[in-house]
Length: 385
Ligand SMILES: Cc1ncc(COP(=O)(O)O)c(C=O)c1O
Image (cartoon, rainbow, N blue to C red; front, side, top):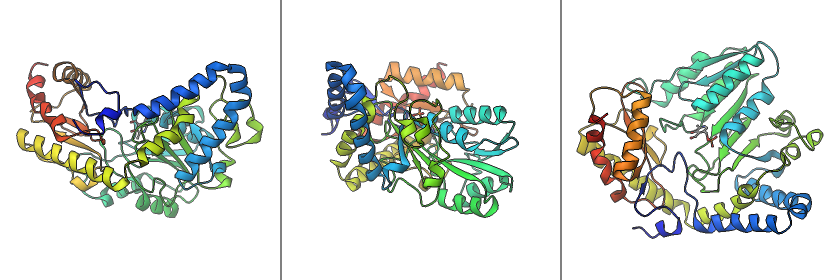
């Protein structure tokens, strides 16, 4: 077992290979969260009226500085889904607006955008990005987004790292195209996977960026951040549920969203400190090495090949094609994911984007190549479906 594994309370019988969906929380970070909860329980009235606003501001200032932005441009939100939909509903206010997103976007976010479009009598255009042989270069992806843009486009939502397919989109190239073709469009970056994995986390140009801390930074759930690039954009962003201090504007309007457990936000600076207790280069080298070796091992064992160039994948996640003739349906993928969990004691996710079926691997500091060994028998389990 590697030396980091014991710093997490993960079940020692289980190979945890799906940090990409649900990140594990280190014991010291969970303990820091518990401290905040105990403080809250010692005097809830004092905590909510006096202590929480101060602690919330301190946590916000810490995280904003870590992201190299100003606390005036940063608010905590529960998760990437709510953050992106918050930004989109604030920015799409006029009827007949045109929203653009990509076919590799996160399903929940695409549902939210479709509903915002419906409510505002606007339209949602999907830039089709093929996952398999179609996607070979960053230019192919940028061209697909370009084809969906018009000078009527008012909002573009782009993933920095795509969810199911773990691809890194060429954000800076795409945003340059958007600024040229659709100069009135706002750009919202869904950076659910970015904090911790990519540095710097914020791209050079965007209007609103939303990143999860409860994935690769290992903060307790739920914790994410919404960053506005300028005070002018911040003036436009309102919470999904307008509440206390609404009139004070961003970010104060986001601080008190009713009685809730805010300890995950308060513990996020502790997660960042834990994350930084291992240097970025050590973690990055470890995680990249594990994901490269594990993919190579499975590709060789299964006799399959990578479908898209390896460098298009994000550094710490990868899709490896299964050697099965027929593509599995969504419900077969879910059934196989559960079988792998129960029979192989391995947590991963089986997906069917494009025209084949894959296992999506994640690698975090607590993983080792041997964790991925049992996956070799996934094709045998698939035969039993
Ligand atoms: C690109 C992207 N957006 C949004 C989400 C949703 O994240 P959350 O469940 O934290 O809202 C994910 C989750 O994996 C994702 O990959």
